[in-house]
Figure 1 (spheres, rainbow, N blue to C red):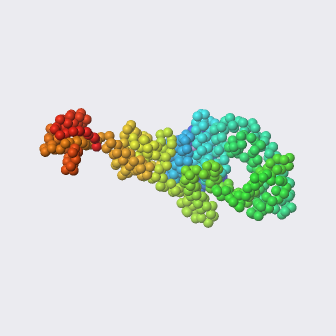
Figure 2: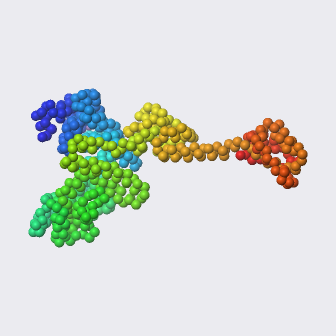
Length: 566
Ligand code: MN
C-alpha cells in the first residue's frame, strides 16, 4: 500500500495522523524553491517507505522538520505519536545542527560523530531520505550554501550511506552533489559523454543476442543481462587517474550477467572468452578471492566486434544483492588501498574497520529472516561509540575523545601549547570549569593565556594519556628550569694558609655581612700547605657576594676566594 492509500483508507493509522499533522504544521510554509514545505516532508516519508522502513520511521519522516521549523514542541509530538517517534525527531533535529565545512581530515570524525549522536541507525536513514530531497532542490539555494551542502553530502552523507551498504543511495547523493562541486568538469562530461554513453549501450545491446545464443547452446541461461552505466561522479574519479582519456575507460557502460549459481558464472566466463579474446590482465576472479570488503564477482574485459573493449561482470543474484546492499567496506578499500603500507594509516584503517565490522554484524542480523523483530530494533541502536565522545572546535574540526573527557583533554588534543596555556573553556558558549565533562556534539572553545603553565591538579581529572603525558612533562621541565635559573645557595671556596683562629675570623666576616652560613667544610687537617675551606651560604645577591669576597681577601692567611651559585 502506498502512503496515500493508507491515508485514505485508515485515517487512524499512525501514518495518516503524521501526514495530517505535518500538513497542518507546515501549512502556508514554502521551500526556497517555491514549492509547499509539506511536499519536502512527503517526499522524505515516501523515500523511507520505499526503503521498507517501519511506520515509526516513516511517521518521523513526515514530522522531521516540525520541531525545528514550526511551532510544534517535542512534547506535542510525544503526546500524539509516542516516545519512539519523538526520539527519532529529536535526534534528526540535533543532527541538523552539525555542519561540515571541509575542515581538513576531519570528515571521518564527523561521520563518527553523526553516528554517535544518532544513537540509532534509523535516524541516519531519515537524514539520508531528507538529504536526498534537499539535493534534488539544491538549485534554489544561494551559491555559497549550495557548495557547502554539496560538500557535506558528498563527504559525509554519501560516505555514510556507502558504509551502510546503501550503494545506490550513496551513488545518487554523489551524483547530485557533483555538478555543484565540479561545475566545469560536469559541463565537460555532459558535452563529451552523452553520445558516448548512448553509443556504448547501443553497442552492448547488439552483442547481447549473440552472447545469449552462445550461452543457451551450452545450457547456460542467465537470470538477467543488463547494462550498467558508470555514474558521473565515479567516472570523473576514474578519468582523473587516466589523464581524462576516455579511451581508457572500459566500463563506461558494463554488461552485467546475473547467474543462477557459481558454476554458471565460470561457465559463462569461459564461453565469453571463447567468443571474444580477453584483454590481458583484466580478468578478475573476485569469487575465488573476494575483495577485502567481501565484494564477489567475476570481471573481464574482452575485445568485442569492431575491436572495441567491453567490460563484463558475472555474478550470482545473491552476490549481486550483497554487493549492492551489504555493508560495503569497499569504500575503505578504494580510499586506502594505495596507502596501506604506511603504519599510521594501518592503525587508522583498523580503527575504521572496527566500526564497519560492527555495522556489518548489525546488517547480518537484519538480513536474517529468522531474527526476532524486537531484537532487530535493539540491533538498530548504535552503541559502538558509547565509550567515545565527539566534540567540535569553533572552526568545525571534530575531535574524537574518550567518554568523560574534559576541556583540558580537548585543549591538549588541539595542540600541546593550547593545553599548556589553557586557562578556561566555553562549551556551547557557556563558561565551564576545566574539569567539566564534555558531551558529543559540544562546541568547545579553549581560552588560553601566553606563557601559562599546566597545573598539577589537572592530573586528577584528565582522561587522555596525551593530556596526562604533556602535563607531567611540562611540570617536570618546569622543576628543572627552576633549579637552573634561580639558584638557592652560594658556595664560597677559600684557599688559605692555615693558622689558629682563621676559621673563626672567616665565620665572623661572613656573619657581619648578614649572610647565613649553612655549612662549613675545611680540609686543613689533611696537611696541605694551602688547604681549601668550602663554605655553603644562603643565597645572596651578586653585589653582596662580591663585597664579601673583598672582605674575606683582607683576612690574614686567605690566599684566594671564589664562589659559585648552586
Ligand atoms: Mn528536512
